[in-house]
Image (cartoon, rainbow, N blue to C red; front, side, top):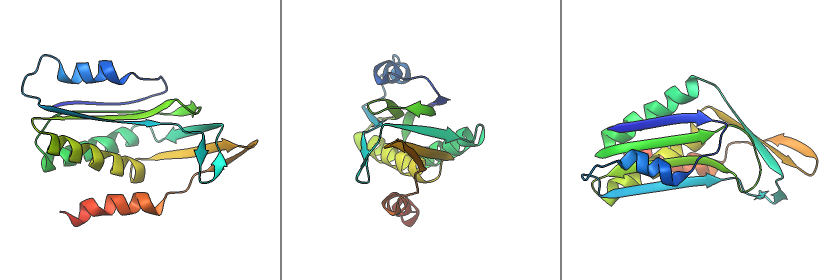
Length: 154
């Protein structure tokens, strides 16, 4: 299985990342992508920017652990996870998850599984800028609920 995990400050382009994952392979019948983008509103207030911090080394290991779990659960031919860190403004890319499989069901489920865990378990911290102030963003119960459904399925 082809796996790419990158944490980077730089922007990314989903098209070339998909092409890199697929290459000349003809055994892939489904590619699912999820792109997370910085938005300008959150929880009823305007957001002018956000800064994502991470724990280098640990973040990559945690993401790799969840990619391995996805690989055990579904027949995947490839996974790409790119997560940005640093300061971003509304409209900027934050995260890209690409899953490849022979069939769509596995690709969709694996992409959703990986995003649920990125939101709840990967060691990232988010600080938002709004109205001249900054605040750290707390975890959301809805994200935790989404991740719990995968543990109930095991």
